[in-house]
Structure formats: structure tokens, C-alpha cells
Image 1 (cartoon, chains in turn green, blue, brown, yellow):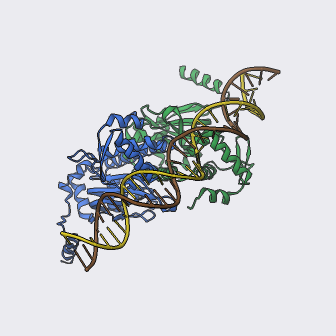
Image 2 (cartoon, helix red, strand yellow):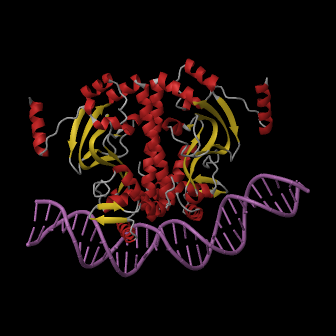
Length: 248
Length: 248
DNA sequence: CGCGCGATTGATTCGGCTCAATAACTGTGG
DNA sequence: CCACAGTTATTGAGCCGAATCAATCGCGCG
């Protein structure tokens, strides 16, 4: 009864109906590392998981805290970021529908190395450590899938390190725009389907906000992109590939 | 008999006695992800593994090739690196006694994202894919340990990205020196127990060779390090921590 | 409608890269 | 064991990409 009350308050706060997603029917799951689980395992998750709804700007977990489970994004967009010196934010990567976050800390036994903040209202399921460990122990296929995911991330990280160390800002920005499009897709009007401040784009690229702004205008002048407020429309993929020196 | 012959040739080429290391007695194993395997599992490895001896400068595997197994360093030092544009080398990390390399590609199903080259003569065991997958499937503890290792690497990668994006070269170099000491330890004379060219140090730091050289002389002038050819002796850890802005 | 943050643009500075010239060192073959 | 060739290290000069600082503008929101 008390729980029921809390739930209602929660819903009122959000001014939105919030229905706890069911794993069985969850479309996001089919995209995720959980896609191959059997009925039984899904049931295990369903009965132990928690759910939450975060509004834009809220943080799901903070760098430095201890992990006791993992999060599966039901619907939404998240930035994974880290504090550099002077408290400057460094964005490392993003997560969206079907992605799992927080597993690195859980599996390494370390504290979170990144914070996870919500870019737009997002619903997230929470899976406690025990359930996850159990799945890994019982289902080697799942374990392998988890490893596959982690190892792919590692590959991207090596690439990012090389780019940061060797590519000039202009090239990195061009590549970041392509990656954003690849990651989030496009809206109907052709704009990249994510809303970021110039500061956030700068952080992603690893450059000052002003430099980022200047280069974006240049790209616009060169006809490679269009800008409408925070909307970015990519007009010339080939041009960006070229200025970004992207070969793969 | 044929095998015996090959082995002899191998030994002659190397002008050194090369005894295939036995996992059972391998000291490196106790440091490695294989430390908790049981007798039976060790036997499985022993009967399926191959071994090899690489001389300084040789490459164990190349970025872009397909992986069919993993490598366990018996004794030696290895740099994991990647080609940036213009063929410029980017060193991502190192591996030494007891470390396992090549698992990322194998577990992700992707090609090697890095090359592995030998910094000093190194003996390496090779474990075929099937054996590894078998271990993972049969021994969840091992799977977890493998994940733990991978996830710790991920944490380091995020840190590296943040440093590259935000710290100036001077700070990064100071930190790299501390990391080298941490990773390889010191020789009797107090020098860091690894031999790198200035170019390699520059690559690690993400800077031009000349900048690296200049800063090293500055550090020397400031009494934080001593230089003797390729030997680097750290005299003032606190000083390096400070100039490197290292807090952990 | 006004406040305040985010975006933009300009001016200036400077860290770090490139290019160039030596010097020191390493390994190799005679 | 020595001389030579090819690296690797060092140092200097000059340039340029990108950061910082400063000022203004625009807009989303209360």
C-alpha cells in the first residue's frame, strides 16, 4: 500500500504515465545482450529487476561510487562521462535503447569509472548483481555475449585514443559527427537524433567549446552540414569522411 | 621425431636454450588469469598449446588480421600498438610476464585492433580458440576472471582518453613515467625496467618525439629524473605526481 | 518581459609541432 | 677490433593550430 502511494507520487511528479516495461515484450531487449535468453532466464530477470524513470539532466550513477548491479536502457539516451582536472567533463561514450551500462564497474569489482547522465527523459531497468552473476554462471552463451560486447567497446576505445593522440581537432569533429549520426540515427527532417550542447560536442571531440563552434560554422559554410539551433543535419557524408580522414 | 628436429633447429636459430614452459610449474601463470584453474584444466591447456620465442623487434600479431587464439606471455615485454594516419604508431598499452594478449579480438569476433610487438626477447604460449572457449563454457569462474581483466582495461582506457583530451603534454609525460615504473618495476640501479626509444615514449604520451625529448631534459634539470642513454631513473616520485597532476 | 545560460565572434597568446642540422650510438661486416 | 652506415637523440628556429579571454548576441524559460 505504501509502495503504491509512492508509485503514484512518482507518476505525478513526472506528469506522464510510466508503465514498468515487461522484459518479455521489451523491444529494446531484442537489441541487447539479453536477446538470446530463454523464458526461464527472462523470468528470473523480471522478478528481480527494478525500474526507474529519469528526467533530462538527472544522473543514474556517479563516477567513484560502488556498483551493485547493471542498468538496461529501456528507452532514452544517456551520456557516459568522466571528470577531468578542474572538473571539466569528458564524454566517453553514449548509451541508448537496449544498451547496458554499469557492467564494467560490476565485473571489474572497481567503482564506477564513469558517470551516466540522462540526455532526454529515459526509462531504465536495474538488474541486481546476484542475478547477473547467476546468469553468467548458468549460461555461458550469455557470458560470451557479454564479453563480446565489452571487447568491442575496447576496440573503440583504442581507436579513440589513437585519434585523440594523432588527429587534429577538425578531423576529430568530422568523425564525431559521423559517429553521432551512426549512433543515434536521423529524425524525419534529417537532423541527427540527439540534442547536445556545443560544450558537450566539444567534450566529445576533446576541444574547447569555441573551437568546436568555429569548426561547425566552417563545415556549414562548406556545405557539409546545416545548423538549426541544436539540430545538426549532415548534408555531405562523403565530405565529412574526407575531412575526417575516416577510412574504415 | 620430425617435431624434435624442428625444435632443434629452432634452438639453433636462437642460439639459446629454449625449453617449452610447462604450465604446471609456470611462475607466470600464478600472476595470470589462469591462476585458479584446476589440474584438469591445466592439462587441457598443456596438451593443446603451442609455444614460440620472439626476438626483439618481431611482431606476434598484426592489426587487421584474424585471431584464432590467445597468447600468454611466459617471459618478456610487449608493446600493443596501432597505426594512426600517415602510418604513425600509437602505443596503447604493454604486456609482460603472465599477461594475456589477443583475447579482445578473439572474444569480440573482430580482427586484431592492435599489433603486438616484442620489446625484448620474449617467450609466449599460444592457446587455440577452441580451448579458450571450452574453458569459458566449463568454468564460469574463469569466465568471470577474464571479464574482470577486460573491464579493468576498459577503465584504464577511459582514463587515457580523458588525459589525452584534457591534460597538456608535460603532465601526460610525468604520468606516463610513473605508469612505466609501476608497470615494469625498477632494475637494481633504480632505472625503470624497460627499454624504449624516445619515439616510443612520445607515442605513448601522444606527442612528437622532439617534445618528449625536451620535456625529459627539463624533468632532469628539475631533478625529478636521471637519464643515461635509454635508462630512466625516477628520483622524485612526488615531483612527478605533482607535475603530472595525478591524484589517485 | 527580463534574466541567464548557451552560442557566437574577435583578438591575442602560447603550447607544441614541423623542419633542419648535428651529435651520439648500434650493429655489422671486413 | 675498427670503420662505416643507419638509426636514434638532441637542440634550435619558426610556424601554426587551438586555447584562452573578452564581448556580444540570441533565445528559452520563468
